[in-house]
Image 1 (cartoon, rainbow over the protein chains, first blue to last red):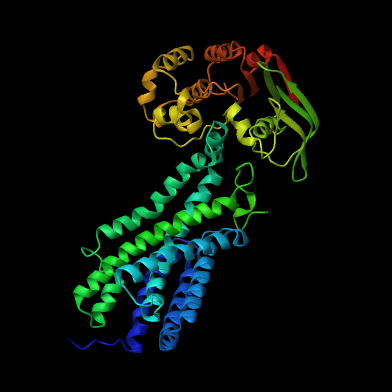
Image 2 (cartoon, one colour; image 1 turned 90 degrees about the vertical axis):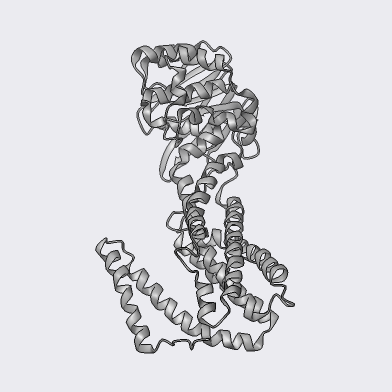
Length: 266
Length: 205
């Protein structure tokens, strides 16, 4: 096995120069996202530098309770990020989004780690935390896109929604076209990415494993299973989020509540 | 029968209805007229359950309007909004959309029923195979109205049903609806012909 080429701190710093491209584009088109992208980059750097430290500590402890607590913390941060990015009312949406995340992770983690990988202890820190992190990280994007597409379209196209309700649709039937479109918008890119996997893009986890010295065949098998698990977890998370949040986003007459968006008045 | 008693509706500081009462008997055709912003569409929205915060008593066919009865009330009505910005790809999808709902599946009209009504409304049934973008606002308005009528609900709530129509077609559409004796119709309208031929005119403002 060839020696892994390390990246020294000067090279790491030089790598940041690539961020000048997105910063310039976002500034040039006056998107208002320059501050956000800089803040996200700083956060990403600090978080990843810290992750090495605390993962080493958590791995050495390998306590089921601490591992589960850690996943809860990750889920809370994921929930906060989703609500923040989708402009929704924090108080109303925290519980449905958090619950959907926990349930979808519990199901897909249990299946993948317990049935596919056949771990004796599915809460083993070395598997449970990174796999859950990958699932959460990958599903956040889909939940944000779906929630945004779903609720903003219902709000913007109330005529269509009301036309359905007032002409005989039950609540599920009136929501169906919005759900269908939100799922299409959210999952079309993931389907496209999955379809070209290996041809154009080499997924991060597999690349990481190969760079770390793993057998490429083992890395590929893990990656295939992970992509399938991510897909299932994402769609489960998205559907549960919509189903749970439907219960709090509409009044007793099935009208969309005025206060569901962060900047609207309750 | 529709009974509205001592209705009070406000949107923040603006009072839309204050101590408003109205009785509409079965089969009556009622025109709601008045300047913009006087609450004409609000009345239709109220009856369809889209204004949950109101004071007073509203009942439709002996069902008191509240969250417990709204499902039953919505089964009795067909509703045509003023702005028909309904996003469908084809005319066929738009026309048949309400008949896809469980409640209306057994009401799907026959080709003959569609043909007769389209004929009355001066529409060609060939329109059904067209893209929605290819038809005019007036054609779209008549197609959605035809779809609502073929649902055969006892109460029709329509907002400016003839606003995009030529005078000659306006009268045909109005006459067809006025001749349906058992159908209760509440129409928000600026159309003189419609108002003059209605059983009752409620002028707001």
